[in-house]
Length: 427
Image (tube, rainbow, N blue to C red):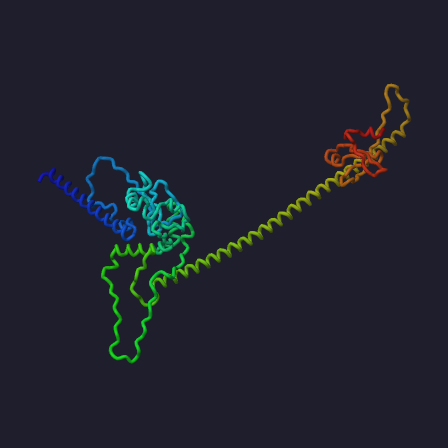
């Protein structure tokens, strides 16, 4: 056989194998989807568990020079995420069961509101998907949705138990996809006492002294390989999630699974209640400490402001006393200088006055006294009674005339224009 014939034979075998694999895969997928519609379980999850998604031949295709298209891989969470009010307009509007959580289908919609698969399923149910649409779920609260068949989403705590994950693991996985899980999803749902297997009735004991061999209890038969039946496990899981039917399990000694689950849920609820109480007490204690700290800070700030005001008042009073001392010292020096000048003028002989020049008359210093009128400080001349502005003299050294003291009325007669000089009062 030539090399060319050998290569063509290999190519035909590979093509035939590929067609057979595609046909088998298509048949298996259609069978799983038909069973999912009939038994009400998640078809995608079953296909993923069976490994029937993206089945490929082990043998690689011959290398071609054509450029390969990069396949876009959409990252998915390691386990189902609950509904938290999110909505992606680019994805299909239909709801998927998603282990009973009823979340939006993540397939990209191209034409219309649904993807190709959901469009086919919606056509069978008068245009509305079996589990409803994301708009229907957004119209109600996160925990109040009911699908067209009257079923409600399961509690996320059941899904966590099924996948054996903790709250920390769920939050960590959600953080990878920027998902904020509502805290109420982690609250354990109340156990419905009406559901589950009915209590076993006690068999009355046989009367003592009865003759004959005691009757043997009937054996419980179990079908070999039943635990490995994938379809049976999926159907049982769907029934447990939907809550439509109760699965009858063989009787066991001691507590039943439902009773154990109820006790566990009760313990978790008690633990959650204690934790909530502890957090409430902690928050109350922190609020009380914060209020006490704020009160102390406010009191401390008020004391600091009072000290600063007192310090400023003392500084102003100190400056006023200093200015008054300086004024008194200056007045004393001016008085001594005037007395000295008077003595000198008496000692010298009187000279004949010149006709062209008038003799200079030295002006005696005006002695003032600090007074307080109507809560404000002023300077009053002892000689003329002229009143000066105290603050202007202390700050700038300016002798600003305010008015004149009236001894009869015992008050200050203020200037009308405020520009009158000392000479107007001396006249």
